[in-house]
Each structure stands twice: as C-alpha cells, then as structure tokens.
Image 1 (cartoon, helix red, strand yellow):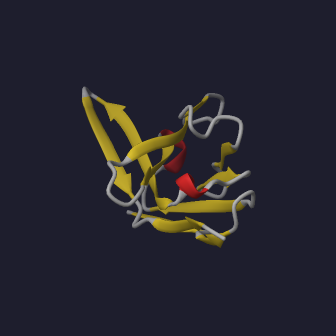
Image 2 (cartoon, rainbow, N blue to C red):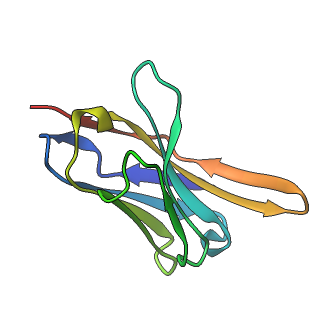
Length: 119
C-alpha cells in the first residue's frame, strides 16, 4: 500500500498550489480521503475531507473558501487545490485514506509534502 503526495513547495502569499496524492495497493474508491496538515510546533489538523464517491466534502474553517478537495477514482488520486495562500498555511501536508469496516477503521498515510508560504 502506498500514498504518494506531490506538489508542495515554496509560494508567495496570495499564490496557489495544487497537491496530489496517488494511491496504490488498495481499492481507492472504497476509502474516504483527507488532507491533514501539521505546522511547526503545532498538532496535526484536518484541512479537508472527501467521501469515497466524491459527493461530500468537509473543510476546516481556516481553509474554507480557499481550498478545494477533489478526487479522480479512475486515477486513484486525490487533489487539494490551494488558493489565496497565507503564511499560516505553511505546514507539512499529509494525505490519508480511511474506511470503516466491521467496527474497525483502516487507514493509510502518505509521507507528507512541505508547503511553505513566504515572501
């Protein structure tokens, strides 16, 4: 099982980035997908989540209206479009796949990709 994130980097405030997370080794379309982030010295927090079929999305208040999560189950990939980036968006962004089955939660994590928002 693998989740591989890409698309992170350095961007100026007000700029945009698109993160991608490609899954393999599991049935991607059975899992809800989320992007979490961890800023230096802070706890990991949920940024955005999308249901297995893409019909439902949820966002943290801090990113609502600026970030968009989407998925392409044919490509086993989830995306995070980040616009109007702020310095406080600087963090390592992690992709997570999860599903509940028989009372248990199964989850997989990517290795993370660093997003730095700075002049």
